[in-house]
Length: 271
Image 1 (cartoon, rainbow, N blue to C red):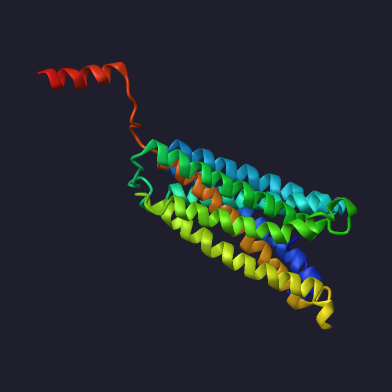
Image 2: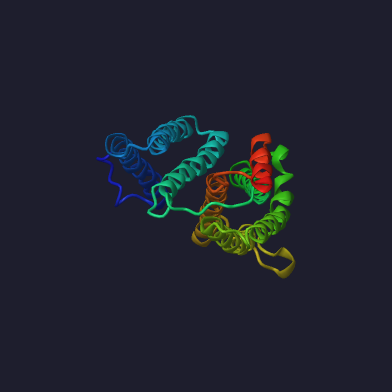
């Protein structure tokens, strides 16, 4: 692998082999990460997630190898979608090891916390469905059973933008700065991704009614479509971070009415 004349190879070989070399670097870094976490960080969540990242990177490498050996588009779809899971795990680890994480503010109302969590899960579900449909168009567009994604994926982007706005509306008065940052990031990424999506449609399908014909496999098409994939992964990752933040900022002591608490309050009043 390392003896291959990578720098002097043609465009397709350069990209393909560069992707493999990047996988080697990521694998070595994941080994370093899990060893560092287990030997230098006593926190159990950090160790567990670091181990999950290592396992996910190994699985991703195996999927990539099977994709090359078997040359199947379904494996290409799985390889691309599983990358979002690996990326999200890395983002979670960065989140929980950030300097301000242990000092994060918690919400005071359990009802508000549950409402925001519900909307965050809705955002994640919509983005996950949109990301998978994008994978169908990228890898399985020539199969007739996935032709429905050709129409659903562009229009479903409207639903994604609406639910991200709903999430921002839900957290507007929240005391959690982590949730507010996630909301702003999701709105910005959703708008950028929608814009890139329109550009992707233009470079892939053109505008035949206006006499614009798309040039297949052109450099511009490859760059725009790849950028659409990357920003989609970033948006999905941010929704995962938002769900984690919702779980981690729940009230420390939910307001619950118990017989003991009622008795203590009544005793205080009578005294």
